[in-house]
Length: 132
Picture 1 (spheres, rainbow, N blue to C red):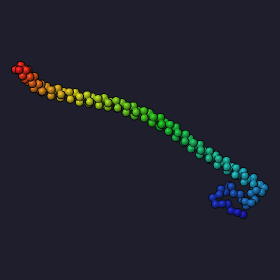
Picture 2 (cartoon, rainbow, N blue to C red; picture 1 turned 90 degrees about the horizontal axis):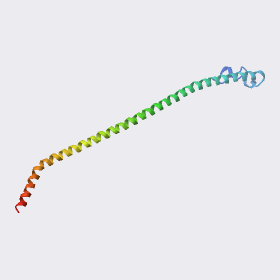
Picture 3 (cartoon, one colour; picture 1 turned 90 degrees about the vertical axis):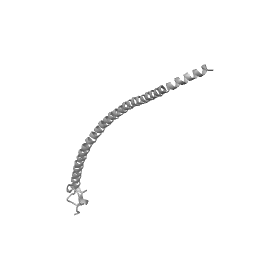
Picture 4 (cartoon, helix red, strand yellow; picture 1 turned 180 degrees about the vertical axis):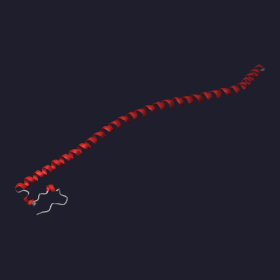
């Protein structure tokens, strides 16, 4: 009598030597047990696959939601960036305009200071012309 391999399922190991499995009734019983065991394993595999498949489907659904939310967020960031760029341009233009106004005002002030000198120069030229 041969002993079953270690870790073997006792329901799959017949009580007779392996050489006699193919003889008579033992072969039929062995095949029935084997087929029952295969069906049982198939059911277990199907349960596991169904369980994991549902998790996979749930994960894909969640990823699609995340992708949609990420696209919305990207659009919002793009829109905010565009608005910020426009506002920044307006601020920059305002700063440039104020600088020009200050420069113009400073120039007018300097020319105003020079005006008496220019008036004196003009009178001097007239006097020089008239003395000739």
